Image (cartoon, rainbow, N blue to C red; front, side, top):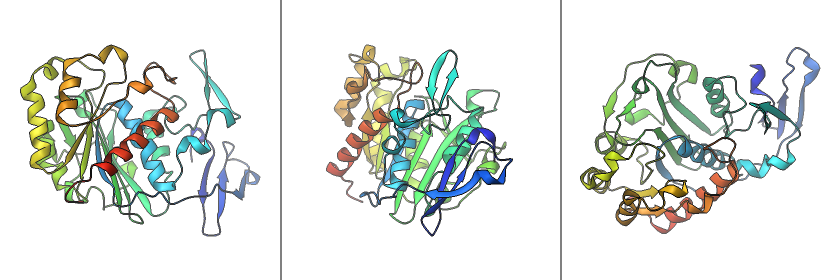
Length: 312
């Protein structure tokens, strides 16, 4: 255990929890205490792939936690109820172990390890993740969450528009084979590399379980390629050919509200309008607290329920 992993509660078969505190040296600090009630989420058979930047990452983490526990993370870890805080860069931030924020963790791998450990015993996450590469193309963050109890699969691919997507896991067993995170943090050869349309047709469509819905967004990144409708049409065509329902998430910044590619993608795919979050509080310059992720994910789940895939 590592000191910055903070307090972490794991339910046991007797509905107790092992409480591990930051002071691991004294065995008296290991005790059993009551754990919050774990509810079953109503979602069953959800098969969703999310593509985008770090804002999409935190939506994924929030949704994966809900699918695992039946509670939204912020319902039981609200900012107002937390007793501890930490001063970072002159700003008082909430408890070190705020799942949907990297701010309190010593390093990104430790943030990944914490997030990788919070699921129920029926669920696991394979994290095809590496952050020490010399260039952006050498770094990965592909996450595969699977809960066999409810048959839910959820994946996240960090990918910036019109850059190549990489994966070091074979699509056929990326969900079902449980691979230790420590292994995936090492340098391993890629098994797939391709642009967004190729990724959808040659990798995403071969995942098992296969995604029925794909959520993607442009993010706060250079937009030159998005001005070309041919590039956008190639993504839309790949989704249709793979028989996946596409959902475009608008960029969470008011200055992008009138950008042409946002309107175009929303005319071609289902559109998750994030304008409600323009003024929501953030824990850094870009990223929202979990309450915003929860609101967006509830909208997303309603959209998926109202627009089922013919194959689902």
